[in-house]
Length: 366
Ligand code: GDP
Image 1 (tube, rainbow, N blue to C red):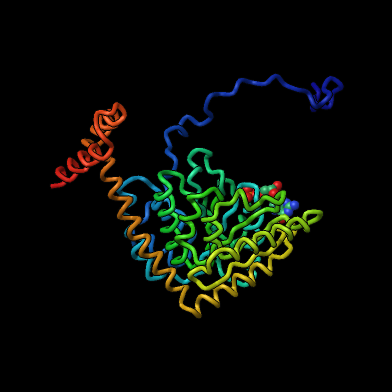
Image 2 (image 1 turned 180 degrees about the vertical axis):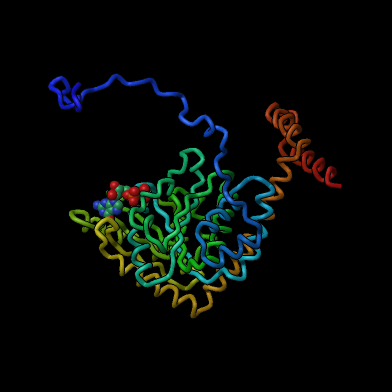
């Protein structure tokens, strides 16, 4: 008998054995083990973790803010209230632009630029369409390649459920939590298509509008209201053969802005060109924003705007709750369908139908 059969000529090494069938489960006990539950924090644990700058706790608190469950909402509201005294000490910047304008590319470089000066940056978003598109905005963190791996940056996609007002309120509340966690720079991104700009404008100190040079008619596609909200307009992709076009677009915007009355801030919005991709003109944009902050802090507009926003959100929240309470009332829900039909059939006018519904609702409250 040979001592080492594998040395025999018979064995060529590297033989391929026939595979065996995979068992459906390797460890039969594995199935029984539940996924470890995420730790459930108490209100004080949340607040403590947030104030210490613990990003895991912060993320979970934001999840509570975004949750539709009443018990989560109750915790969230308490956490927010306890975090309020620690909030407010940041610069909040809204960044808007149509898809493809270069928001993510720009936020990546803007973010790195501001982080060079120290501090921490939170990037939030308001995207009312994210329910449909499953988080087109910021849904994919890799859109901000460098920031997403930066230890001082916190990126959070848009809350997706609910109305624009609801989505915006959640982002506004998330700002408070981020500030309490020591994030002293907040970017709020939104897609430049209308309504969401107003929402972002209502929670930031500076509103930056990213535009592209077009074919000379770039002003046509942009709504006057959005331009009036802008504290700065920046024309992206001013690189290569596009530089001249970008400069021309900038002068168009400057001319158009001259036709508007001076905003309440007393600050005349500036128009600059830059390239997010090549990192050109970034410092100039940030110098402009710094200049704005010096200007509005001196003339009192900074505090005035924040107070106005606080007022706005109080009324917004009241409106949202009243609306929810009305529309989620079971009696009203069934009545609504019938009333709608009556209005459509011409059996009742819109006003009478509305009054009838409201009267019923108020009666139910008594
Ligand atoms: P978003 O949809 O507004 O977030 O836009 P993205 O940041 O995803 O950019 C859209 C496209 O424009 C991408 O292909 C970018 O590479 C490109 N892009 C962004 N910034 C610049 C720039 O400064 N110059 C040039 N040439 N291309 C850019």
